[in-house]
Image (cartoon, rainbow, N blue to C red; front, side, top):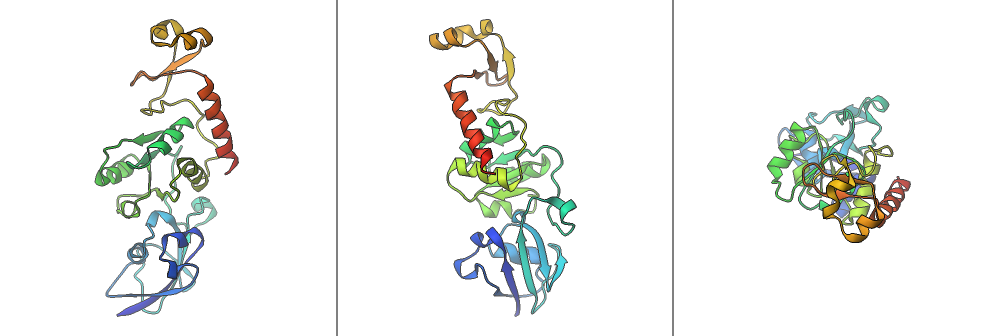
Length: 247
């Protein structure tokens, strides 16, 4: 039997057992084990980790842990490899795109509201989520830590909160998304980019008061949902402003 000593920092402690938080603790193991495997055996997905040190030296996930090692594990900072050459996180190229699991439907709507390309279906299975996240280079958002531990998943985040509005703030903070594509560009229902449509074309689908008081409309080219700047638009604007103010 071998024994190594781990210490996790910042909010990674929230993913550990209570008796392992905020302190160095021993972990007993057999054979040749990578640090990635041991970290995930403790409940911390690799997507949450940005840096690891063994005995004060920067290492990567493939490091084979030795008997007596002291390992420090640091969370994702969002600063990227340019700010931290020891970062283990693969840089995200271009505008971030997301894929969400079955339990995050409201969060998907909020991300689409801000203009982010967000895939969501209520029938995605875990293997398909991991495959699509990898294939399409999307950030996988889920509360299922085991899903994030799949080797196919490169970019991901374990949502902590149960409240969808707080979940949005978490994602904005986690990926430093003060800048976003622009609100009300995407269909909240199906993620497609909206297109302008004349009032005459869709007048037969409008309620009397909407037809009377509004003249500017957009439509989803796929699901045909119609959008206009009614009271819901103002409520969403206030919500977006409040969410971004908390970053």
